Length: 351
Image (cartoon, rainbow, N blue to C red; front, side, top):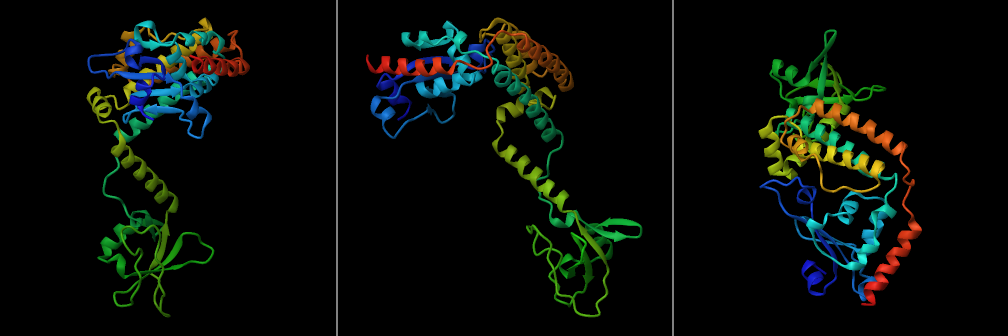
């Protein structure tokens, strides 16, 4: 089943404009995101082909099946609570039976985590982007040789420097294990001794050992810093995966404002923290944001990252206090939601 079939079979019961245009934070370049709810035909729901969600290729149009919609409401999912409370100006169509679903019967102190903790996670995400931009990883991948060191006088010397100073090739080196000394090897050198080298190739992920003839002189001890190499491999993979998958437009915006953090993520941090505070104090979800100018300033990179972290910490403290003093229940009424899911579906199938 696809989006066209939902429309053709009149299965959509809620369709709304979402995202920045619903929040009142849209600009000239903003896309139009659509979210909504549909109800599966009886044969699909009762059969083996339940479909929880249908979206287009870019995920800017997403419809949730009624069961999934209620499930997400039961855990106070921010996206679904926003969808339920979409302002009238952003609702494209809505079946009257959905008027039974009122967020006042669903909101709970779970929102402190679903809105608040998610918001604060965006700060870490923005900081991670900052790290990637400020500390780019060279596309040329380092080999194990860059993480090996030779004992030298009272300290150590990088293996690559040692080889260069002696005009030696790593392929002419031989290594043997040193008993009781993890990741430490005896280093030998000989051009015509058929040693296996320190590594078999630049892509090797481990040291290569050799058979050493009796009487050969051990040049030095070699230490392979496995932990340093593993960390480098992880950071290299994460960085170049990020480069391959990053949102190009958002990256260009980040580079243009020069603050080295994802300003859009930071904007959503403050939007979600404010919404969480409002839920605790007012017991309702305000989708349209009253502080558009401030949020757009954050999005445009008008603030330093450290200043935003300090402001968000004040918001976090305010949010914690608001929920501590809130009269909201600890969790939603699951019995009510279970009954609601049944009644709505039964009503739809009776039409």
